[in-house]
Image: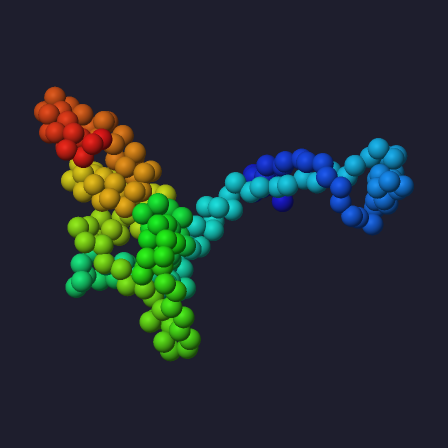
Length: 196
């Protein structure tokens, strides 16, 4: 395996471990090849690539309609946007509170067999445009989104509503980068009206 394909960080810590390589001596001291004061070391490895791969796999499952337990709607008659409660709850305090605080949305439903689609909880988020909700859910799974002057304000307001702070910060930075003498007053009014 080449070094480029491995991206590991190792952490060392010392603790007593029962191992066939180590004998406990009198009083619990460790005896090993290095002598009575030797203590085994444990290294913890962390892959910097794994979290991204995991999210990408979750995103692929979501796009294929597999293992989703949540249907998000921007209105009662809009198309569903599939998601996972655990992913959206981990992404924002808004969904975390909704699904863990004892509200009706946090009630778990269990179905088996052909009724498994019934276990998808349906949730309408009034005040969000369908396309904007799609962008926000996609960001929760990938950390990516496309911004332009025509959609940044809607995305920022919606992200603020569902407490998706990273998107609010990205949109704010985008607006700052787009400041021009022709739009500075409009952006200032927008920022002031949304407490940015």
